[in-house]
Image 1 (cartoon, rainbow, N blue to C red):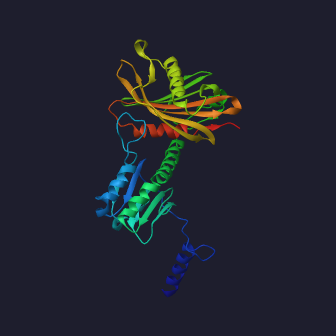
Image 2: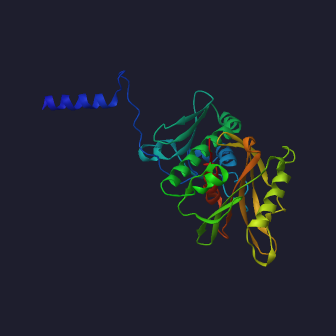
Image 3: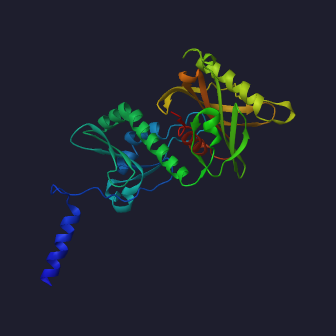
Length: 325
């Protein structure tokens, strides 16, 4: 019996240690969680006070470009004493607590994989608020990148083949199998997915580099461009037009797609006098080699339905574009 016990102990030691004799932490369970579902680990007293308010201010802020307010993340709070075992496998988490130093650490695959966690500590509540105020953008960017990768991983399980895009536009894209090609020509590509009430849509086309001349003019020029293309290519009844909603100025950001500079525009579209509208995200990707901007757009028509996750799926699709070498 003693021999068996000794052998089992030796196996455990071998499994838990690497060649250097250190504990092997390479194994992690698979992470879980809905897209953009953030686990917040914080004491109840802090959550119900000013620190919790600061967290909600940033991480439950309205998502850019949606017609109704929807939070950036759906949050689930729990005290640190319950953050054990399966509770530690959520794909993204924010851990906020009082400690011996003021520090923010973004940890990857701490308890599961893939996983991104932000650990915020400070010696006082005021310190926690200051840390969150200073570092929230960095934390949100890390969470966002992680969730885009997860959405793309789920897409890769079952994809629609759109090989003709490589011949027409010199790019490849990963699109879920639920999408179908609605229209395809040498200069315009339209894919769509049917919902219970409405659709989500992907548009791909190109315009000359001269279409967008400068940062200061970009918003107006992008609106003019997409209104011209949308109004010309997307069929709408009774001679109405698919245009950018003029009541709200779109959000404009700078980003990268496949390592190339891109303007990212988020806003809402409408069909005047038809009571139709919804959100869009547009990427104008600068392609100097081919003297063009490649335009990638995703838009949703889904009345009375929350649209954050629908638009997030579209963003993940557009960000999967790869240019041919």
